[in-house]
Length: 179
Image (cartoon, rainbow, N blue to C red; front, side):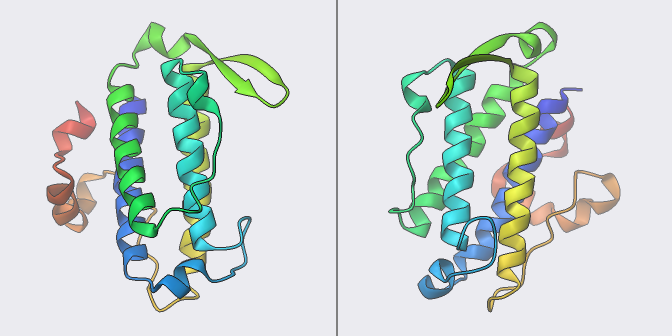
């Protein structure tokens, strides 16, 4: 089993659920000040996307692409579309992460300088980062007219009926996840 691929598919699915819920927000609710590490749903979703794009650049060896720039000037639909594209790129990358590839080091361009880090550690950090900030958006949604979606599921057989429609919309199968 490719653990990283299963995590990337779960990431794609969870982001789909979260973004689908956020689509129902008014512009005012999306941008409204809220309690969290970032001051709004908009800023939190932009942070998730910015960091995902940064780490995809790291993983692909694109040093120029590692310059973080905030997506906060984009509309929700632009952010959601880019997040969905980024999630698919992460899945594609993780399909190739096996044994030796996971231990390969890549360069991270940070404010403090250039560092080398293993791919497996970067991926684990990236998935943790996603979960952390999706949870913050989930909490922020509780203060809006849109109910927060279920985000703490994985691909357990017993829960298959709860994700059938989303899997169809995403073009995924259980085989894709567990190949």
